[in-house]
Structures are given as C-alpha cells and as structure tokens.
Image (tube, rainbow, N blue to C red):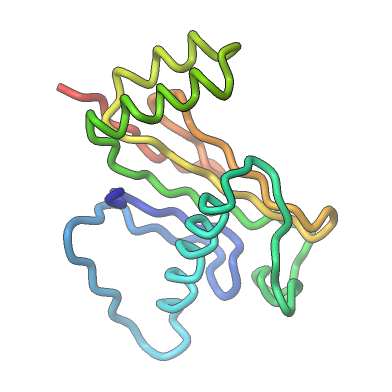
Length: 153
C-alpha cells in the first residue's frame, strides 16, 4: 500500500512532526540529529505491528525508555499513517473483516466509500503493549491535529 501521510508524536527525538503529502518518491533532508531516521523508525513501527496481524501486541525494544521523547514514559507514543486503499484492496479488506468480525457489518460497509485508511499505533511503557486501530471515520484526530481520509470521487 502507498503511504499518503504520516504524523508522529512523542517518538524518540520527534515530539510532534508530520509528512502531510507523501507521493511516489519522498526525500527527507535535514541536519544531523534532526529526526529523519526516527521518522522512518516510526513508519517501521507501524508496518511491523501490522505484519503481526493483531490489534494489541507486545512492543519489542532493547531500550524501551529511549523510544519516548525525552524518556518521558508518561505520554504515549502515537504514530498515524494514512495509506491509499485501492478498490481491489478495499474489497479484499472488507471480505476479510466480514469473515473475521461479522458483528462489524455496518462499519465494514462504510469502508467501501473510502479510498484511504488511517492506522494509528499508540504505545506506552506501563503495559508494554502497542495498540493499533483502523479508522472508519472520514478523519482521525491525533493529539489535536487531523489526518484527512479522502473519499473516492
């Protein structure tokens, strides 16, 4: 899936940053220690969590306290990524959800009208778990900011 936008809060050296309009090729330019690698690390955190195919799961880190900005473990890490959702993938997603969670029928039907999906991963040290949720609304609020989920024309 293609990434449309990324928002990161409280992850390593990134207190609050966004890549609002990702496209085919994106280049991160900045000084040393500006957070370029940490932005990629935040994206990797979401992708690795999604590969685990579970909503809640362990967050594996050698030095978990260093994953939090200024080692402040009282504020959870939040990474939101908006992925493009082509028609065929949308249909496949709805099919899998219908099999695995038939009680979400109404929400599954609403996904059909969207051409993107927002995934938010939040992590805290208190429970050593990462929580992942798919957005079914048109927009998702991430610490006061908004990531827009565009509707298909």
